[in-house]
Image 1: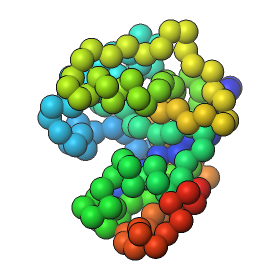
Image 2: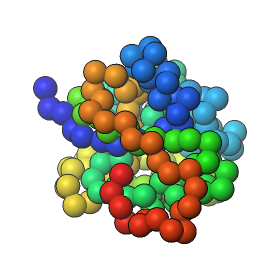
Image 3: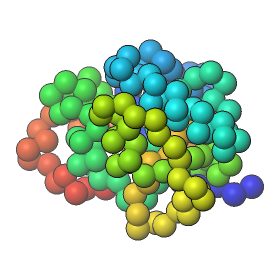
Image 4: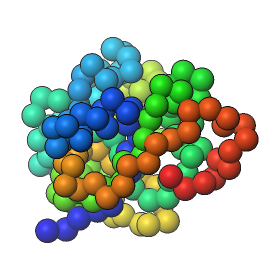
Length: 163
């Protein structure tokens, strides 16, 4: 089976869920804003079109390719989110459970919401290019590393540091 290495930023509470239950699935309660629901449902539809079943849940977001601390601070607020405790989970997932797409067009669909479609044909991973990856589940058996992210002092840290 073809596999792909990915990383995801998750709250430490979700890391504990992964460790306790052996898997992590997307949760509608974790969506940052109700206004994002239509776009997330589009992503679930696109994943279904690609043969990936999310079982009624939103996908888990992950990243393929180079990832640095600055990426975490761009996705998660340094003053509100990161001080609560987050970690980078590195894992290798079955390729057939992963939809790769570009983050820019996805964000354009969110603000304001516009229907979004996954790229056709599917994107081919290039280790030098960062892509967003969505998948229905992360299993503990796929995980190779969990590293906590800093919770403060961001103005003193090397933001290009790989995570």
